[in-house]
Length: 312
Image (cartoon, one colour):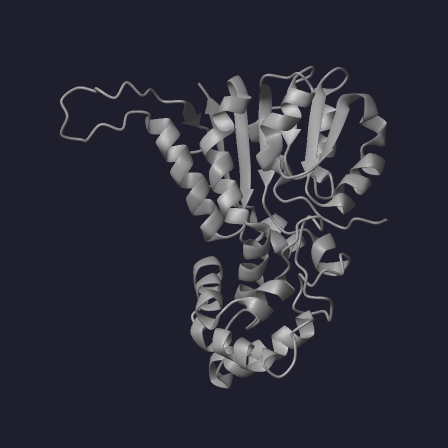
């Protein structure tokens, strides 16, 4: 199997993770293993990479791609929300670095056959982990128009959420919506032609993103992980997060800001009474974006946002 993906901001990721020989790092989203290979090179000869991915295709690819570092790698098929469980299996209390790359891989768009791309005609699935029961097909065929509108609005920031939701319900009353092509046709008809012509992105982009996020519960899982990640890090351990849209980045930024501040007392309080201390320090005060050269070479990274922190 060929797992096609180009890692985003590899130089910046390695800079902020500051991988050292003999230390332990977690790649929570292996994907095509571009970042994982770079980490393995830095931590050799006796470091450890814990690789996680909820997509079985990514694990299969990692078994091959990381074979030269097999003695330094432990792979887990599952969601990064289960990191504490995986660490317990390895009898590891904490690690020296964690990487979260939240982006959709080229493999998902081009080769997965699960309907992630609005440019293909595939079964409307969108599950990263095919073991979970809910699919995009279930959502579009069973949720009410109001529920669909909320998904498109909240997860896709879609302006035309209401008419698109109504169009989906009307169409499914005639025949079940089974493929990505069917859904694209419905969306195209629901959005006024002059509006679609003025958009810089395909009219189906936000709806497909929203459905993928809903199916995989991406924002809820990210929010829960960001609330706990510091517990998994050794002192001076680092977190590096690559997000690809504002919804993800807001969650990451909010949690990092809270952990950096520590004290939650009202500003009018003359002294701190809550006793909370800063847990992390930010390694970059502002979000880090890809270089113009990288965007030219790999346009998929143009929306990437990197945030990094170190545990105190």
